Length: 332
Ligand SMILES: *[C@@H]1O[C@H](CO)[C@@H](O)[C@H](O)[C@H]1NC(C)=O
Ligand SMILES: *[C@@H]1O[C@H](CO)[C@@H](O)[C@H](O)[C@H]1NC(C)=O
Ligand SMILES: *[C@@H]1O[C@H](CO)[C@@H](O)[C@H](O)[C@H]1NC(C)=O
Ligand SMILES: *[C@@H]1O[C@H](CO)[C@@H](O)[C@H](O)[C@H]1NC(C)=O
Ligand SMILES: *[C@@H]1O[C@H](CO)[C@@H](O)[C@H](O)[C@H]1NC(C)=O
Ligand SMILES: *[C@@H]1O[C@H](CO)[C@@H](O)[C@H](O)[C@H]1NC(C)=O
Image 1: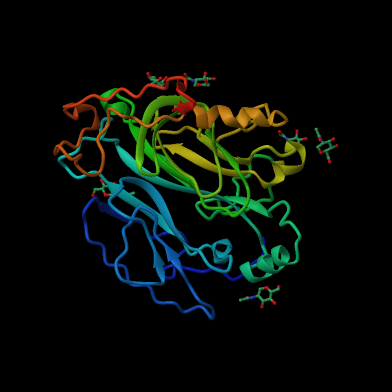
Image 2: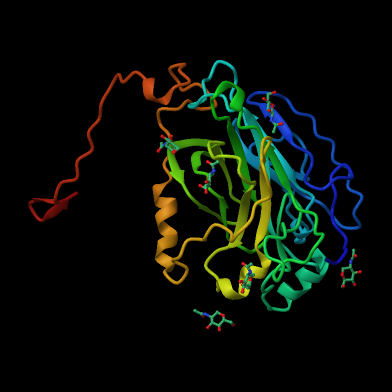
C-alpha cells in the first residue's frame, strides 16, 4: 500500500482515547501544526470558551469520536475515541463487561485530503476507496487472491475465561470513521448485542451483523462463547454495493481467544444478502429503540436519574376533535 500524509494526534494514529465520566472537567490542549486551519469537533463533550473547537450542550453518556471537521481533513485521520461513562450513582443497564474495546472501521483512500477535496470540488465522486481499515490497519490475508501477503492487520485479544467455566463478555465500541462508505460489521460465529448508541442506551437486541454508516458509533456486548478451535474473523464490508467489485476492499481483523488453537480459515461470514433491496436498510434503524428503563446522564426535575421513576402529578389528555360550527364561524 502507498505511503502518504496523515494527521496524527500526539504522534499516533487513532490511539488517543478520551475516557471520562459525566461531569468531569477534561482539559484538552490542541496545538495545530498543520499548514491550514483546524477545527476539532468533540461530540459528547460540552466545550467552554474556544471558538476553534466544537462540542455539544450538556452532559451525555456513551461512545463518540473526535475529528477535525474543516477542509476534509477527516480523510487524513486525526481522530480518536471519546468514552463518557455513567457516574457511580447511575447504574448501567447491563453487567459490567470484562473489557472495553474501541474499534474504528472506515474507508481509506491513498490520496491525501487536499487531493480528495479537489476531486469533490471538481464535481466528481470519490469512487471506491483503496481499502477499508480496522483500527488503521489493512486486511488479514483471508484469501491469497484478494489480499496481498504481509499486510499489517489488527488482532483483538480476548479471554474466554475457561478457568471459571464462564464466558467473558466484552463491550465493543464500533465507530465508522470513514468519509463515504457505509459498512456492515460482523464477527464470525458471535452475536452482537446492541446496548448503546451515541448518548442513549438502547433496548438490547442480538444481531449477526450490523450496518454502521459514516460518523455513527455503537456499543455491542460480545460474549466469547465459541470454542477456540480457531481464531475468528472481524469483518467490515461495504454495504449496498456490488460485492463482486467491492470484495477487494473488505476490512478484516482477527479476534484471538487466548487459548486459540489456530488461525481463522475459510470464507468470511456472509454479508446480508439484500443489497438490491434498499428498503431493507430501514429495518435496522427502525429496530433501534432508546432504553427508557435505563437512566440518563442528568437527574430529571424531580431529582431521579431514572426516567422510568418520574412521579406523575398531573395528567393531560390531548384529544383531536372535528371542527365545530358556531353560527357562521368554524371553531378548531
Ligand atoms: C475507561 O475507564 C474505565 C474506568 O476507569 C475502565 O474500566 C475502562 O476499561 C476504560 N476504557 C478504555 C477503553 O480505556
Ligand atoms: C497531497 O497530494 C497532492 C497530489 O498528489 C500533492 O500535490 C500534495 O503535495 C499533497 N499534500 C501533502 C500535504 O502532502
Ligand atoms: C478467493 O477469492 C476469489 C475471488 O472472489 C475466489 O474466486 C476464490 O474462490 C477465493 N479463494 C478461496 C480459497 O476462498
Ligand atoms: C443474545 O444472544 C445470547 C447468546 O446466544 C443469548 O444468551 C441472549 O439471551 C440473547 N439476548 C437477547 C436480548 O436476545
Ligand atoms: C468448534 O466449533 C466449530 C464450528 O462450530 C466446529 O466445527 C468444531 O467441531 C468445534 N470443535 C470442538 C472441539 O468443539
Ligand atoms: C457486479 O459487477 C460485475 C463486474 O463488473 C458485473 O459483471 C455484474 O453484473 C454486477 N452485478 C450487478 C447485480 O450489477
